[in-house]
Image (cartoon, rainbow, N blue to C red; front, side, top):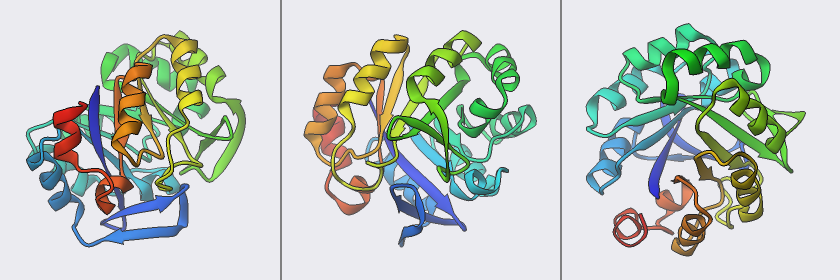
Length: 237
């Protein structure tokens, strides 16, 4: 199982939100580029970067920072937030990104998802962000009437081969992941799933590994020190 540190960027800073609430933000002293190098120096084999400004406004905002991260570290970088067109996807790949994550676009533009999967294959990931089992879009600010499971099944038909599942109510809370929801998604699609949201203890990673997720994204717990990246990479990853 791949253990993936998260770097959320807002206004050029490295931040974490509580349950996706932009008004409940914690800003960390290290800038995103420094933090990226820090995680890699501790053994990270992949980084998860989110452009929070882009997710909220519908266009990629922090492309310069993303480019510097992607071209400055020697591990793959996956990026989401504000990706709304094939042009956006191409620009991220040109910036050195390894995988592009589609969230809002996956809900609003099925044809784009289909084209992206055809052109870019495994380099396209769909992010399913759910609140009480229902998909949320536009920086998690708008909850749809689409269930996470139905969206995943629909995306598989379009050619999607990998998902990132985030339970918004757990994200940034240092509680625990929604193990039941993760299991249900894995069972429904039989497709690689990366879990995110609520991971705060090494035992959570062990359970996720047993469930069969491909990877686990850790955010706040790394920044607070509740999880030591080197230790979990040595013992669990």
